[in-house]
Image (tube, rainbow, N blue to C red; front, side, top):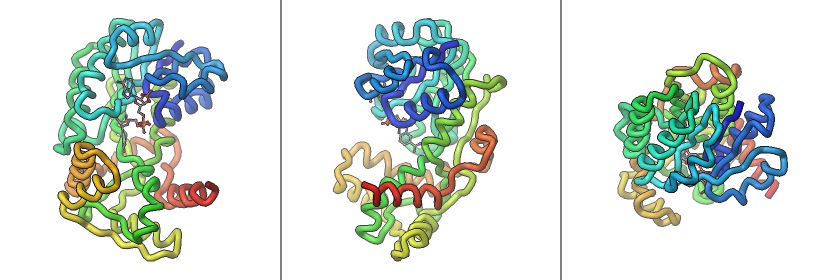
Length: 290
Ligand SMILES: NC(=O)c1ccc[n+]([C@@H]2O[C@H](COP(=O)([O-])OP(=O)(O)OC[C@H]3O[C@@H](n4cnc5c(N)ncnc54)[C@H](OP(=O)(O)O)[C@@H]3O)[C@@H](O)[C@H]2O)c1
C-alpha cells in the first residue's frame, strides 16, 4: 500500500504524515510531497519517500503519484489558482490509478457563500465527476488561526473581527490531520462528506473571554465593519486580496457557515476534539518557552 500526501511541506500535510506513521503505516509506504522538498528532508531521513509535486506542473504530478494507492490531496494556498491546481492533481491521480482521493475542503463548500468556498466547491465537483472514489474532508477553521494571534491580541487587549456573534467550531490542525489519517487507514469512507470541526462552538466574544480566563488580562472583542477589519489585516502586513478573503470569511462565520454540529471530527478520532482552552494554554506555554 502506498499513501501519497500532498502539502507535506506545509503544516497540515506534515501532521498527516506524522499521524499515518503513528497509526503504524510503514515509512516506505508513505510518499510525502510538496514543492520545496528541502523542508521535509527529516522525513526522508526517517524512511518516508519524498517526491517533488507542483500542481502547476503536471509532469511532476505523474512522477509523484506513480504507484499510489491512496491520495491525501491537501488544498493549496494560492487563492485564485487553486481550482486549476486541484483539477490537475485529481486528473493525475486518476491517471495513476489511485483507488481513493481524500480532499481537504472547506465547511459547507457546496452551499457556503463566502469567497473561500468557491474554489473548494469547484474542486469537489471535479472530484465527483472524476469517477475516482473520494472522501471529502470539509475541514473547519483552525484553532491556530486564533492562537497564532495571541501575542498581538495580548498587546492590544483586543480580539478584532467582523464575525458578530456568529459561532465557529474550530479545531487544531493536528486533530484534522489525525482524522485524515484515520480515513486513509480504515475502511468504509468512500463517498463520505465529513463536516469537520471542534466539539464546541464559540463566538469571538467567547474567544476573548477564554483568553481573559487563561491569562488574567481583560480582553474584549471588537466587532468591526468589514472594510475596517480588512484595513487592519492589511496594516498587519497581509496582501490586500488575502485580507479581503479573510475578512469575508468572518462574514461567513457570522452567517453560520463555519458552524457544524455533526460531531464528525470527534467520531473519526474516537475521542473529544482539542478544546479552545487547551489550545490557548498550549500556545501560551509555547510563547513563554520561546
Ligand atoms: N481551515 C483553515 O482554517 C485553513 C486555514 C488556512 C489554510 N487552509 C487550507 O488548508 C491547507 C493546508 O493548511 P496548512 O496550514 O498546512 O497550509 P500551509 O502550511 O501553508 O501549507 C500549504 C501547502 O500547500 C503546498 N502548495 C501550495 N501551492 C502548491 C502547488 N502549486 N503545488 C503543490 N503544493 C502546493 C505548499 O507547498 P510548498 O510549501 O512546498 O510550496 C504547502 O505544503 C491550505 O493550503 C489551505 O488551502 C485552511
